[in-house]
Amino acid sequence: MCGICGELRLDGAAPEAAILTRMNEQLVRRGPDDEGVHITGPLGLGHRRLAVIDLSARSHQPMVDEELGLSLVFNGAIYNYRALRAELIDAGYSFFSEGDTEVILKAFHHWGERCVERLQGMFAFAIWSERHQRLFLARDRLGIKPLYYSQTSTWFRFASNSQALLAAGGVDTAIDPVGLHHQLTLHGVIPAPHTILKGVRKLAPGHTMIVDQNGCGEQQQYWHLSATRPAEPKHELEWTQLIHDALRKAVERRLSVADVPVGVLLSGGLDSSLLVGLLAEAGVKDLRTFSIGFEDIADEAGSEFQYSDAVVARFNTRHKKIHIPNSEVLPHLPDAVRNMAEPMVGQDAVAFYLLAERVSKEVKVVQSGQGADEVFGGYFWYPQMAADSGTDLERFRRHYFDRPHSEFCESVTPAYIGEDFTSALVEKCLAKGDADTFLDRVLRFDVTTLIVDDPVKRVDNMTMAWGLEARVPFLDHELVELAMQVPPELKLKSGGKHILKTIARGLVPDAVIDRPKGYFPMPALKYVRGDFLRFMADILNSEACRQRGVFNRRYIDKLLAAPDRYFTKLRGSKLWHMALLELWLQLNVDSVAGTSAPDTNT
Image (tube, rainbow, N blue to C red):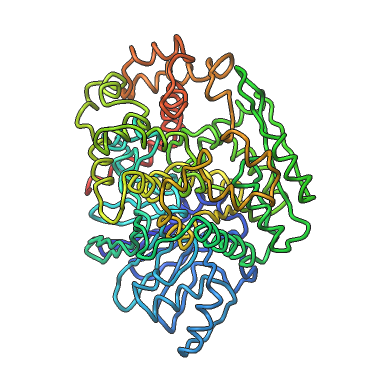
């Protein structure tokens, strides 16, 4: 798990080592163990390493294979690298390292661009071919690992976060109107290729990209998720057994591929509790678990310790329980936002940041339960959508959008009022084929698009900010492909995640299975009061915010006057959403404004 960056010059000049160094400096927290820079011809690569697999210097990056004429930077973990390594050895390749990085190099040389189809895991990587003078970039099927890029007529740059691109300079930092519309209506999700900034783009999950010396960026989709029933109908017991087997395999894969201890982020919910149970079932001894909790506000509990404690007692884990008072949350908020590659509104982003700080002192790798709700139908809005009527877009929009287009137009200044970009995107995504029912289409859209830029991105950013690698078994692509074949009505039984509850029964405490659906709670960012309200008011009333001219002041004043009255359909604070976006811009864009003026050759 690492941070990667690079620059391909398109004008015949050589990359500047100083630019690669600036980019690498923005990736230090993702990879605190080692660093490297490699320049060859028009291409420069940078890398920061978090040593998890093959801890020796042999897996140093950028990795260069002179014999094959290939150079690589890679972020992620390939869970089937040992099997691929054996296959490549049989094909005549020899290896100088023991990790998964070199396997990708050899796999690309042997299978070409289709090597990605053979990789099981999470990854973002770039390979430079000296022979063809082309840069090949790839991102894993479910977008667990990030890959951002920026381009002008003179260079193409890529990195694991937007901060590295901004630090390199020359990026157009104007607000992208499409990105802004998605940010404020689609729960902070801006699907690829857009971001909140015009000059920063991201590679979509399950896609590859080739950039040549002419700057041509050809993209290909190598993975498509179908949500249809199998030809041979299956009973509930068959589905349950198949999912149980696939989930067990996914958990064990993420345990065995590491040369360091692996822990679990235990929220007290079904998903992370089930992971603990499956790890115990696999024979793991001395399992380390970690939980975090906050202060209660407005009758909303700030922790789920009563449930995580029951799991700890059942499996006798080595557990650390962390309670964070609100007085400690607020001072850490800016640093958490500074480490977001994009503005992320989820309350649990800050919670993960604070938890990861403590956990990173104990272990380098954790398993986490992200993806279970989206893959197995755990959210409250799924049955609401299913019971509704109208077009796919109408049913989705009524229960998910943070703001209808009319309210978006009320919230921003006239310069940003335009098309209903979010409705157009959702309608297009829900109209794709290979999905049997409305809920199949919704769940696939969630898994392939929404989850990528919401919980998955949050976990990656907030854990990697402390050099902690988070692995997500529920997003094992083989498990996801199987789960998408399961009838939606079976997923929604028992209040959602019926199959997971069946698997968990008898393994984890019944209280965890039968409890109401919970979320990683941080009530202070939902019920905004006291110091938190003053903090957000200062941000939104600041001169920087007023000069930026994005938000309609009347709308901001309305939210500040009664923050407890304005919540989204998904129960988020509309005030926090606005304050978070502005704070992110101040901390990550305004702070480098002097080095990030748009390139005049764009």
